[in-house]
Image 1 (tube, helix red, strand yellow):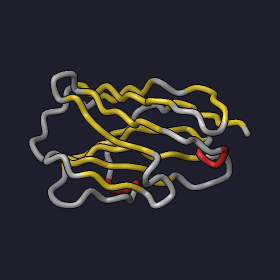
Image 2 (cartoon, rainbow, N blue to C red):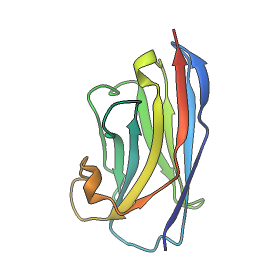
Image 3 (tube, rainbow, N blue to C red):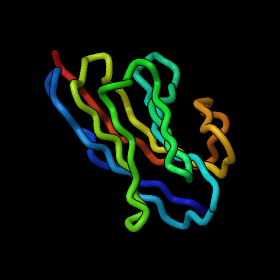
Length: 124
């Protein structure tokens, strides 16, 4: 069973930065997608950023140019560097993964493995 554990959330002022981490264990797929979703109160969970096993990345339009997804294969850890944070970035952030070939989907139903989430709060 794949396990994903997020960390790094917190409270920051608008314009600030945070780096989220997702430690993955028992992940043995050679072709996969792994990424970040977020869910604000009263809103649907939405895809934020994804990276596939070849290193190709994709981002939601709302975070392009501000967020960067990366991974450290030696540490089995996924990162999300979030800069120029805005109050509308406030949400619970979840790490998600699944075996996949091709462009990573942003549809949450395509991901079988989820972390417990980490809260990000951006104040104005």
